Amino acid sequence: MVVIGGNTTSSDFAPASNSHGFLYALDFDGNYMWGRFFYNVSYAVSDISGCQLASDGSTLSVMGMGRSVPIIMEMDLVKGYNIGFYSLEYHGTSDTVTPDYGTWGSVYFDKKDYFSGK
Image 1 (cartoon, rainbow, N blue to C red):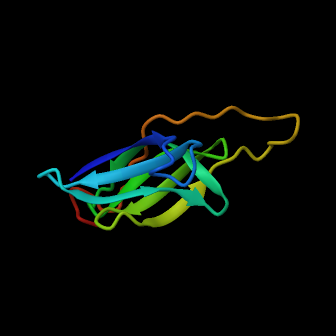
Image 2: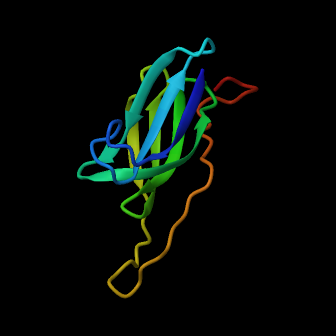
Image 3: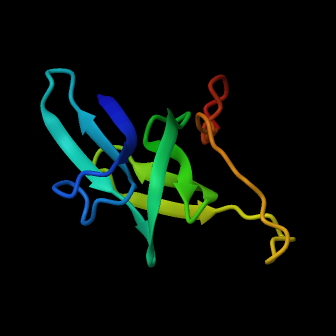
């Protein structure tokens, strides 16, 4: 499977022409398997910066940005559904303290040890 992600401003893929993060998957023959753009409640995930297969090969960890803060999603690899969604924000954020975040790559979800299988 090949998974491709990024951001789009296309109004014929996402519901509006503002930035939306997306992922889509193709099988090794180039056939479309699934594709999604993402929201967390009322705001769009604006960018997908990377994804990493979990150690057991069943899920995909995805890193991106939404509402100008980093987000991490856990995705079902076969269906492309969101299993978990986490947004990260500095606890001291206020009207006068506004951190500037960026994401590059993703995180590795170590669900199963390579050597012991636990």
